[in-house]
Length: 396
Image 1: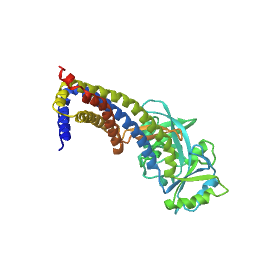
Image 2: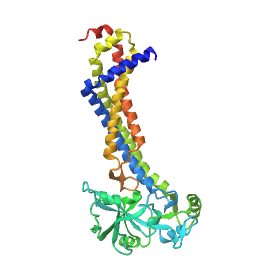
Image 3: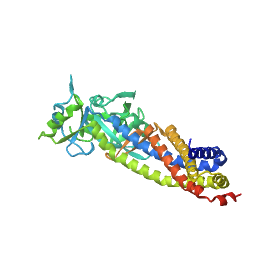
Image 4: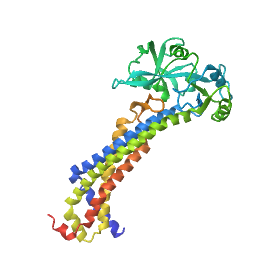
């Protein structure tokens, strides 16, 4: 081992052994950096959870057919003829009952949040029995399926957990119509669990929409069949529709909110990081000041300036790493899997999701904590190295 490394290891070991003696000031830096990491990871895990909920909804072998130029279901509409054209197009899977296609009516209703009581926009979807076939993992987990032709609704598991007035057996009024809640369903953790479903013909009648629908979801014979389906229906002069895979559709839906969350999360973390850096600076300056005579003695014995600087940086890095571990652990054990809801800016309706703290987010938080520690230790380290030996030796 070179003399430089010998000096560095000796000083660093001494600094780390003395950390318990400076527990108070060290704790300030750890808590400050840990708080920043906790905020950063929690905000990013919100975006990750929202994106994951939409990703679980998106399949390459299922298509979403909307009116041409419509960015979402709420602004789309077409008649029964268009549904028939889409259902008979090449590339759509078929079974003994015909095309595996689900025409659906989509609107929004108000429900109170269970936590706050404030009103939220909740998707209300009219479906046929084909709706379950084009969604992964659909099953009734409580109560029963609604009966066709009746004013009955089933509620997604996420919506049931987040919104009030939808308990099993309860009657809920939207507009002037009363609906009876008869079941709760899940759909593989997808965005469908944020919705309320009823019979398509009943919902069309309540809203006086005749036989019009907003969207057709259809099962493809294979993911590659989307090309032939697009050529057939988008080029048909009788209808005006656009075809996208379900994965592509939900990727567009999530883009706005995920980008916003990442921007806001990063901005907040940077602003809080400034405060954390000052906490680390204060801690390291205090550590250097308390060891002024000690550092001067080492310099008089022949220890170089560089090992002193690096040793202070390493000590600050250790504090930053401890803060990152604390912050990441708090978010992982406190928020990972926590159910929440937020506004989908693409459809202006609530979407339920679970905070998702991934290993990549934890690594991001640790990386940020190390940067904060290094920045906080740089100036105190330079001050320690530049301290005049004679002045330091005169310190009490």
